[in-house]
Image 1 (tube, rainbow, N blue to C red):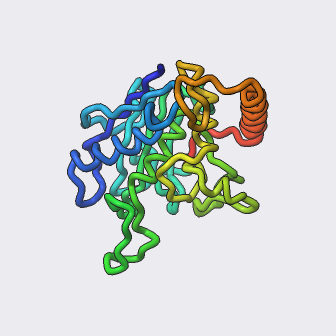
Image 2 (cartoon, rainbow, N blue to C red):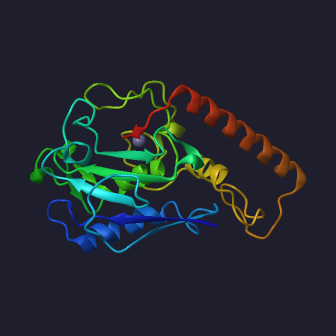
Length: 248
Ligand SMILES: [Zn+2]
């Protein structure tokens, strides 16, 4: 069972949030990817908050809110200013790595443009609703990038930062890895992709749910094998089509 540890930063917190609230929300987002909430060979935990603030390949998977500017490590420039409408950006290491090749990922959160709600409620009296987003859903998506998943059904980002999401199926739109979505519970496709990368330690736990400890009948096993093979093929094609270092 692989373990991934996330470290929330106290350097920047969502406006009006305590370090404890930030950590608790990060813990719920981590649990969404973690055994036993999903039946893959992975646990995701959250460490005590740290005053670290730099996104760098230092062995720490950092979660940090940017407040004054929306730029990689607060340094703005042609390559480091993030798209304004992106709620968060994850930098994966080594650069360009995907899947289990990702050794570390640092999540920078756009506190300059967005206000984050602790629960998925938007009050229209508190400003333009589109700039209020539930932090838990944002973190669930970005943690997916830290774990090596890519955006579902993504044609990249427009110059303003909005994802290009034409021709997406309803099943793709249900995914937490759907760019611009606000889901905080993994869909079967999200779970399938995660279990492909981090197979269950006990192979008798069937991908996508089912009764633990009961082996599937042979026909189910064959079709499960075919489904996993197709998912792996689709994943490989997607990797070839979209290779980037950073993911919003
Ligand atoms: Zn993304």
